[in-house]
Length: 450
Image (cartoon, rainbow, N blue to C red; front, side, top):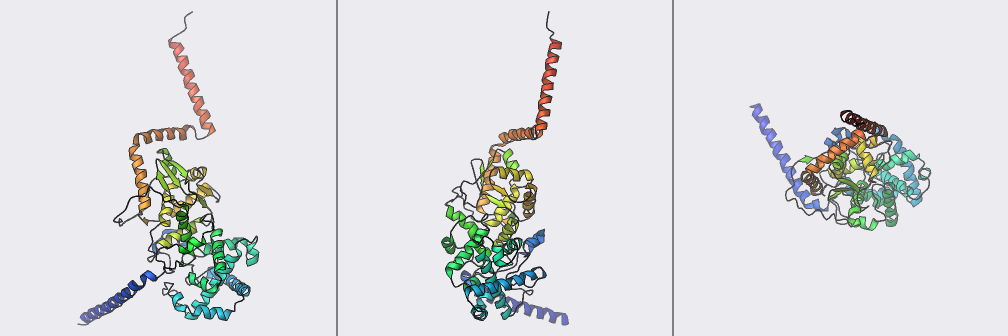
C-alpha cells in the first residue's frame, strides 16, 4: 500500500515539473528572438578531454563563475586599483556608478546562466559587475598606443599578457552591457574595443572596422547588434575578416538539405601526406580570409600566428560555439579540428612555415605540433564548407591514384636517400661503386684484344 502511494506521489511530482517546464518553454519561445547568448560554463565534455586548464583564469577573474577562487586572489587587488584609477580619470563616484548599474540588475542577472555553485546576492552581482567593468575598460584604455602600459597599470608585462588572455575565456566574461553602462562616451568605448583587437591582432587582422562590427549579427543576437560579451565581440572580429575581404569562396555552391547527426574530425591527412599526393599547400591569396579553400589540387590556408595564447583563444571560441544558446553556424570549431588534422608531426609545421602560412612564435616546431595534437580531441558537427573541402580532396585522391602512387615512391626515395648531405654522398658513392663494378665486369667478360 505504501509503495503504491509513493508511486502516485512521484507521478504527481513529475506532472508538476512537466507543467512548469511547459510554461517556461512557452515564455522562452516568445522571447528567444530578442535574447543574447548567455554567459555560461564550458560544455562539460570539453573539460573532460584534458583541456580544463585552457578554460580557467590564471591571474584574474571576471564575472561570477571564478570569483573569489584562490588562484585569482592577486587579481582582486589589481581590480580594486584599476577601478579606483578609472573612477578618478572619468570623474565618477563609486556610489553613483553602483546605483546606475543596480538599476539594470534584472537584465544583467539574466545574462548569466547561474547554477548552484554561483549563488550571489544582488549587491554582490552589482559590485562584481562594477569592479570588473571598470577594470576591463582601464586595462583596454592603457593597452593601446602607450609605450609602457604596464607602468600605467602598475603590473609586470607578463602579468598584463596574462590579463588579456584571461579576458578571452568563456567562463570569464561579463555582459557587454556593463561596459556600455560604465562608459558613457561611445567614442572612448570604441577606442577600448579597438585596443582589445590590436592586442590580439595576429588573430584578427581586420584594421579599423568598428562601424562594420556594430552591424554584424552573430548567432542569437538582438536586433541592435550588440555583442553578448568580449569573447562574442572577438568571435565576430574573426569572421568579419571574411565578409570584409570580399572573399566569397565561390566554390561553395552546394546546399546540405539535412545535416547528418554525427560528429567528425575532418580527417583528410597530414600536410606531408597531401604533398605526397600531389596537393600543393599555399597561403590564401586574400590575407583577410579566415576559411581554407581547395581548388585544382591546391589547398589554400589563411595565415596564422601561433604563440602562447593561440590554444586558449581557439579552444574558448570553439567552446562558445558549442554552447546550447549559440544558434549561428559552426565556423571556428571546424577550423580548429581541420588544422589539427593537417598537423601531425613537426615536419608538417615546417612545411606550413616554408609556405608562409604559419608563423611560429613558440620554441620549436614540435611544440606547435603538440599544441594541435591536444586540440585533435575535439569533435564538431559537419558543416557544408569543410565537408565540401574534404570531399574535393577525396575526389582528387581517387582521380589521381596512379600518379599519387608514383609520387609516393618518389617521395619515399627522396626521404631515404636525400634527407641529409651525408645520405646523398653515401647514395652517390654507392652508385659510383655499382657503375665501376659493372665496367670491371664488362671488360672481364669482353677482354680487349691486342
